[in-house]
Image (cartoon, rainbow, N blue to C red; front, top):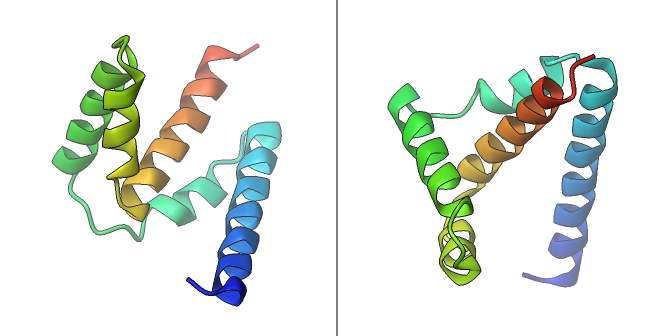
Length: 94
């Protein structure tokens, strides 16, 4: 990846992260829905991904988790990011 592409990717990631942070503050899920809804995955794909994520994150072997996580594609990372935002909202409900 050249420097310009890398900078553009970093800017996009920061914009997404800013959108996620704003979503956390307002509890408005529309930004997250815009990221998830266009993905071409089945409900089973999402359930399987979340099951793997929870099972591997509970293990003591960080290398196994890191290797698995590094092998995920962009859509899978997006699903997990949105999952963590929703989970955080539910865990910290007032």
